[in-house]
Length: 405
Image (cartoon, rainbow, N blue to C red; front, side, top):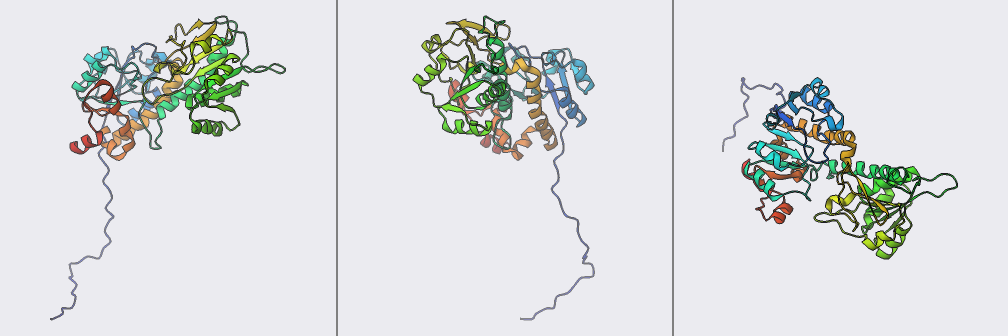
């Protein structure tokens, strides 16, 4: 076998070649619509003027219905100065390919929704109707719920923010109704003073709402006792608060004994699906001190006090067995400006990322955790719990995306 010597061609170049980098996706200019909410007790807006300013400066267009920010004390002038277009016709706002709402889609919204629209909104499982879901499916809508939207750490940022607001707010509300100026309260200062014992607060639930309620109560000087059947949550609460606290599993006789002598009882139990467990009976409430205050944060899922019934921001309390009940289902809406800023802090970076990736659907390939928030994808129902509840066809989102790619 004849071996040939290697030869070098004079045309061969030894010059250094430039490194081939990943070609970034072409950015997409988005048109975002924000309608004024007509839903009961909804004062929030999903994007603040500052967030709108950032989106507009990045090449996106934002349409806002006149007066949409009034409930959160953001003026139309604030939005127009940030670069948004103020629209007087509600139907025009709904023509935007991306719709951002701070309240769930309601019956009045359905005729205005566009085919293949992308909607960000809460879902509020307790009041969701099958007819609304089916109409959205017919219009091939892609819908993302605030409640199920995850961040890259696996937590639910909007739910957590709303829970922090609700937990912090309940103690301020309790302090207000303990005063004798409102609804014949006991005239007790929540934290007490030198020589006088502090008010006793019972918290049912050691989740985010319970933790922030405990933090605020302790900061005000109250005596706090927390009940939850999840030992891990109780341990986490103590670690997060940073001090030893009185905690217990929910044992009915012990709970009834503690409720008899408390000034404030907070219901903050959660349920993964369905109704909140009912742990405080009518008999337990009847044995509480007259003038005590019950705040049932779990009322949007049925409540954990047997005597609880839904109230409104306009008429927030009623009295049963001499005990003042506060059962407003949307507490963060009462602190609308803070709540709006919290929602905006989550949505604005998400929308920027979607624009840079060339659309929200392309972003889903890069950030898998966002898929958890989608319950409708191009009209297909991708939330298993909703499919079981309303007996509608379920389709796996990952399979849908693979087939559409």
